[in-house]
Length: 395
Image 1 (tube, rainbow, N blue to C red):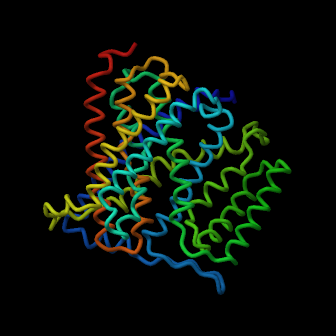
Image 2 (tube, rainbow, N blue to C red):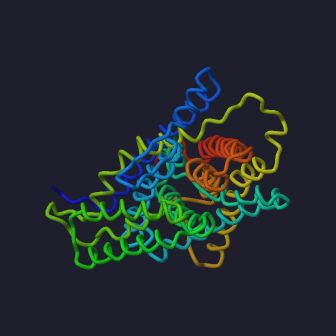
């Protein structure tokens, strides 16, 4: 079989993420519809079904919603980790000249939304826990919107947006690790450390069989879950031990083969299931106060305004200081369009929101409302703006 070039990988990745973004939209719409229909009780009952795994004295018991958020999303983060590793070693992010602009834009796109959220919620210590919610960008949604514009979108703009979103994912992973960690269990951390040591040995010995990596990854996931650190980080850690430079008997690098094998199931099953489970916002009983309270306002404005300000300001500074140049075939109008789409936070924002307000309460519903409003406004404005400024025909 002929090996795929980096451009082939990028094109396949873009195609999958774009179509997944469209499916993601439908999953969110269905969730909102069901949550506000006669089937709303069924929806809530489904998400709260207790699911338990027991082996001897060991057992894990969680409602279905947490198995989705802690378990299925660990696979999502594993795929994110594989993509990050490939991009950092041999992709767009391996070129220091190309990484400056999206890195600067990503930093601005995380900082300014957080500052806006802080401005509206500084009076409430509980609400302040959600400061990182508007800092996230949903690459699947953003690329799904770009896909609606067809071949008119310059390749340079697509690469810029993908690179920005990947760096944004790195930031989100760091934020989750540092700020959304509960009381730590030393025993579980020791088990996690042993699993990481064994993964290191496998990598150093250039083992290409992925089965021992996956088995140790399951042990690592359980240990991290029990440790107080969020379990999804185990997926990212595992990904960085899977060999990328050496090939197995099939002639493919294990990391690239796993990335290829997981893309469809993550893009078309796991992420839509997560959206369906987390986007169901009951709209009955909503009042003007529901939309104007500090949490949804901070999130919505952080996503819609903060992303635009942060991405554009930091991109402008990087270019004007001579640290970077605009991507090939793009201009500032195109970059601004990408900045708008960065305000579609959806999947990652919902995930961080579930960590920030995991104890429940009104804030948890408020954060979903803010995410939906801010993401929807960014998606619609971004689409219509780019539809206006992009050439009428592909060059």
